[in-house]
Image (cartoon, rainbow, N blue to C red; front, side, top):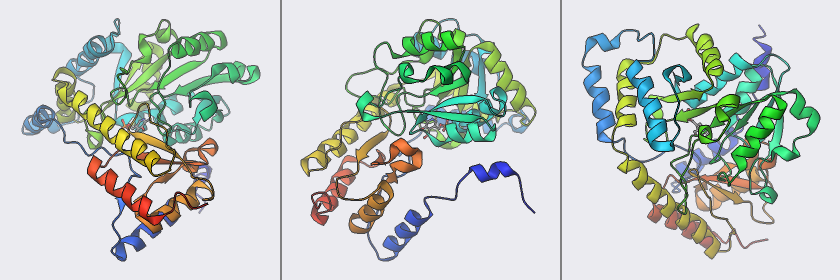
Length: 390
Ligand SMILES: Cc1ncc(COP(=O)(O)O)c(C=O)c1O
């Protein structure tokens, strides 16, 4: 039996070959330095864990929740004031989702018809593209390239594309390229969106992982943002609760209502102990968020600075938990380089091409190892002689 045609949009597992090589290297007893996955290695703050544990003791909390608790929605509204200086968010402008990953997939289904144009970054976080494919929309990829500091440039979007576009997804700090919003960029995007009647969805997964004294903002802080769009606000990376699947869609009421309507057909609500954990995160201390950001910066410095010392010219990431490293000259494409690097050094990265065509020529390295481990990995790279070999 031929299952749904939409499955054909999702390619074969491109990581299979890399994974096989990793297993083979491990079997040989080679040490693996795994920089390929973006799962944080920091502990969950106690107050968040305890809120979940306490709530889970009460049998009532194991029933269908059926809704977002008003206390949780209000905690999000208050957090936007306290953390981002965004006033005016009301509970009907907020909904929970099981992570931005899930939320983004369903948002595309709620907003896009077959054949609608959706603007996506290239390279991009893969669910943006998957959401478009699920909705059978037509993606138009706007490039995030070095010449433009890996930032979106609405001026370069052709007028005919702008006119037919329905939704544009923007995400800064950016995975995989590590760029951050420059002054004025959101104002330009909002003006462009209004002129062309395009909805902007901003994915703000990394507002708390940003370097060199910058402070991550919310897209919703900018004038007119609430007229054109909404933001995904995930607790995954700021609070190290990736497995609990806590994110929110926050913004224009009709957008939130549309996604809520779709999800209410297939969902009975977030587990109450998880909602309690979310409230604890949103209302509790934020020291751990700041401390871990400092540690990410130390890792960024160790990796990018250390790589430059051994002749691999990796520019500093400006934000996100990722480093976007150019494939050194003479090493083939990004997949070939990842395979070679893994085999010769045990360092495992993700090929840039897996994030879109403009990702070719780069590999992504996640800052998920401590400074001593990063230093050890760089020593392995240096002694392999791989970088300076042409
Ligand atoms: C840009 C971006 N958005 C969203 C997510 C996932 O967020 P969540 O855990 O809320 O699904 C990630 C995770 O790597 C990401 O890089």
